[in-house]
Length: 295
Length: 117
Image 1 (cartoon, rainbow over the protein chains, first blue to last red):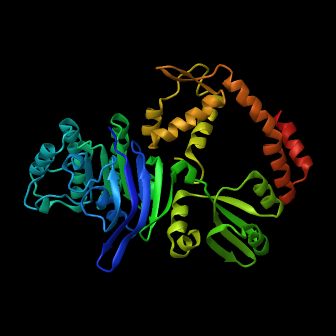
Image 2: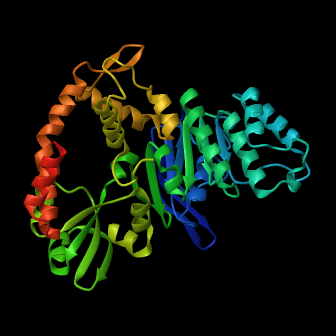
Image 3: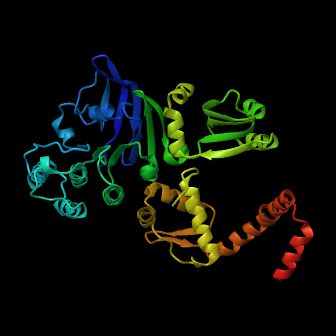
């Protein structure tokens, strides 16, 4: 079973700060989604409303067609995983796992044990005595073993070292294939996890910047390089994400696919067309000038 | 493993074509399942499936319901044919252009080729 997520004109405000600014987004469900955004872009705010951890200031969120807030039947189906454990500091790891097992209808104890071993979690230690990496590993273990139809990993890897992060990515992928569900992973480590995502959502300053299949976004940007005036003429009227000059040479990154005819024309004008990776596209789309140009 | 700057499904399709051309994957041999492929390369299974689908459409692979994907009997020969068509344009013409830029006389190249016979 998988759950869909619908975000309609969502606004989240904290006193004077607007964290989410009229965002609309639809996720069909049953896929691994990447939510990309810089620090403070509103990732956690959106996800907190989706997971019913907080109420929307304006607009609405629907999970499987229903509002999740104070909807116990629905929130049991949603697991929101952060980089810290939602438990008493004085509790030991074993007790935290026991509580999770009692609360989660789809809990897989055998899988939980396998993850505990894989992440080398000390069962008798108190939460307060765990390292940052171990706290992340414990919350990830709970998030995976809970097998919730909607599982959200909100930068859960923070504090994990590279081998643990890759172990986490491998587990997300293999468990998703064995038990398909809706998984949202928020991150800014795109180079590490980009290939895991079927769809990518890019947000910036509380707004939606892009939402597409990952494969469609890959190669969506084009870096046009050549003599300054030729580059200028070719890129005129296009969505410019970035621009660099070196002497008489100019390199302008534009957003959008080029037709074969346009490619031929560019080459005839002595221009070099280079692909732009997902990571670079994200940087360009969310760098302060880039995002403005795109909107 | 894969280049972030172009669609991964196309890179998967190219990789499998290379394996067929080199003989690493033989005729009627079964290829990895999309899930095996996805775990091995740490990519989304939908991406792997898209790469395989591309190859089925091109006639390089064929499906056997409930069993998996296999290399078409004539895949290697037709891939070689496609490569041959592009060979002079992509390899030879490019070499001549490079030789002109760096000042290597074409006679030197011809002599080298003769020597390789």
